Length: 409
Image 1 (cartoon, rainbow, N blue to C red):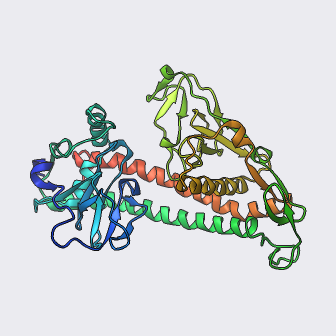
Image 2: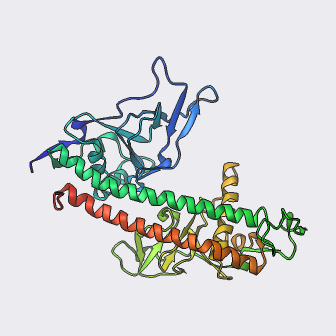
Image 3: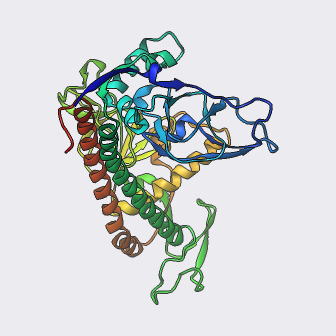
């Protein structure tokens, strides 16, 4: 197999086109850097200039088979490969756009080539050392990267197909988990917001005329026999405490350590640090809550770990983790609404967290809810663990395929 040496700047155009000109579009599909992580797009905004001006950062035009790569903090992996023809797709100036111009280079192969973990770490090192207000790279930092790749485009395409198949399976799992999450939220709302849990005859409680009473603390009607309470009534809560800085390491010495929600993933946090002098602990299966901006973000501990001052851990006093998780999701919506309103929470104190007002349903209702939802809850955990293994396989295969240590028949 013959190889060739390439330089990114020589086989592609970076930031080739921008919006504007004589006839700018009236409506655009806009993608910001925070809305994509490792090719998973969370949100594309449809913006109409007749309603309000486009954001000043909405500048870079994107065509099919374009790579987009965030210039800020490469380690956060806000990059992706656009393989759909979306009319007037515009991305933020926080992205570099890379369009392949060499016909002997497969664009998807190039995407995987420049998003390898070792390349991301290298660009992060450059970003940290650049003179700017925050870690960032410039076009030449990426454009000057050199690689040795297979000359045969067919081989490039086959390598990209293998890696893309793993990513597709991960994305399918993500969609399944999103549906399970939506189902759990719908049932939680039906039972504990609308109060239409099954009564003794199996009919919706409130709709069927179930007795409701006014609760002064919650400032709403709740089912008779239910009570108000505080979060600490239903949860064992541990506030995080950061170990001494000199105890931090990334070589696996000591206990897994999570400082804050920067380590959070879809469901489980990513292990990046350890500490040889752990302070406060979370147990496997505990809910991890961000207590510093953004307050309310959630994950689940998939192993025993140490938590820093940016986190708190919670587990259920009633062995109904699914209800507690629903309560925390509901509280997160409250925090998010306040953030949108401009009342941003920089942090939440121990006293405030412990005393958050919550609803205390009857125990038999909690047990019924848990029995129904827990299989889906556990399935989400199982699927996310599978995704982590698939990601590890992809990240192991990627450099091995790229440097020829693993070959495709």
